Length: 85
Image (cartoon, rainbow, N blue to C red; front, side, top):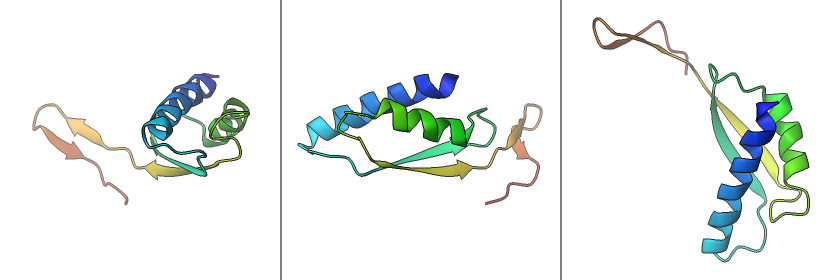
């Protein structure tokens, strides 16, 4: 499950940012995840809860903002397909 490795990396970034800002606790972590990223949101939430235990983000709420996917035409160098925002 690559979501576990992703959450470990996210926690490193969160902890580093918290230290730089002298934060004692992190309450919310918001991530933008591309719809074409092959990341399963439910698996990511589960992994986040496991990885953040006994950390500065223990009990933090994970908010996931889904970012629509788009394709890029190599011939005309423009996005193709309808993007839904």
